Image 1 (tube, rainbow, N blue to C red):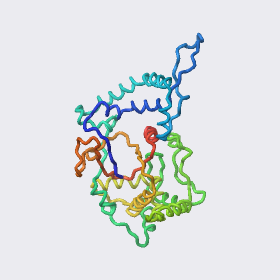
Image 2 (cartoon, one colour; image 1 turned 180 degrees about the horizontal axis):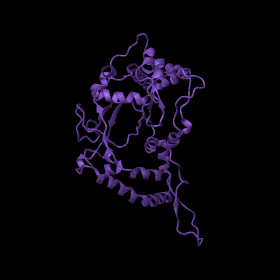
Image 3 (cartoon, one colour; image 1 turned 135 degrees about the vertical axis):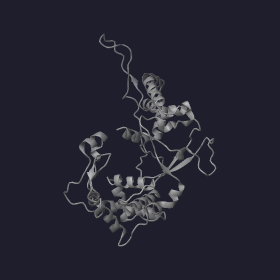
Image 4 (cartoon, rainbow, N blue to C red; image 1 turned 135 degrees about the horizontal axis):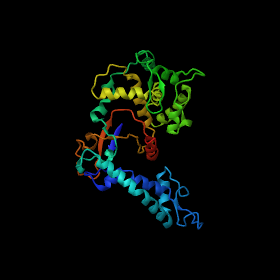
Length: 353
């Protein structure tokens, strides 16, 4: 995944500090859902001063056009109520942000990576360069084996390798499973068989119990593939293959917890003697590239907390971009497969669960 940073300030500023803190996000919540004055009550048991509460104002949306119109329609009374309500929480938010800034190991403002230092526990993400991107997965993992077939070799990677029956547990929904079970779940699930699923506690924690994974026959996805291939062929692109559908389905399940750690270790230069899932990972990448041909280009978000972007992310590239450029564009190659979402609000909420 290529990661870009645009409109980056060359130096630390108060504005960049506030932008990186939760303050502006909290203000946006009040603007999108304006508090309204409660009914003035003259009862001796209740204070006669107006109280503010939210919930009856304009509901926030995930459509920028709707939010734009919502702001334009704010009344003077709503603006006053927003100012009063936000004023009640601002001191606490500002104190929290300053405390976190004070706790940083560096005090030189030019050394502060403001966007990613406002965290209680930090580590540094790693990125690679364009040479890695253009070299492709074959340079990193080796060539796939298409004899006797790509699908058969993908099957072997999950069913007959040394780790095929070794249990592992995902860190998000606490699914304990094996590569062999996951291959069966995706390609040829047994009727009535209870396959590993999210634990109830994990479902409730993520508030997604209704979205727990279900056993769905591969043919269901292949029918969707046929529709997608019509779209790809119509614009002159290579069609999606059955093997790529299988690989993508595996990745969107628990197997991501096997693929990404090996990519991280291989790309870090450390020796890796385990199962490399070469055929499967190359099929995942190929499938994603094909699907991208008919996807609308939009800004996407990925929830990663507690980390700092490395120097490669902020450093100008070798194509003449200068640090003083107010529209500085810096690029880095993420070493892993990443899930993203088009809603920043939802991704932030999920990351905070």
